Length: 92
View 1 (spheres, rainbow, N blue to C red):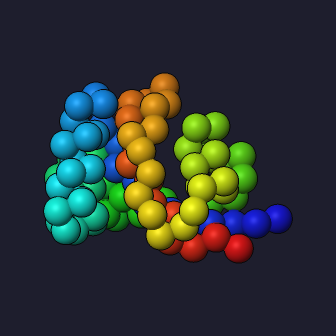
View 2 (cartoon, rainbow, N blue to C red):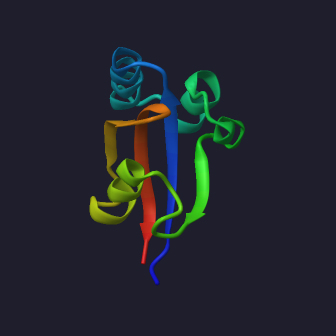
């Protein structure tokens, strides 16, 4: 079974997610932005979700983590919780 290491920022609206994505594109620190903007409990850890296994996250996020390229920012990705910016930094 494969595992991945990922981090994310959860935002309430697509517009807010796009704004934060632009801040990231301009070189701002992911962890600092996660702590400032994310509404997920993982915000305290800079958005780090730790080790993730297939099926552990909601389907749209699971698809990003296990089917998209690593070390690249993905999103905004919509789920029932809001809009996510997701980065996978390790996948085996």
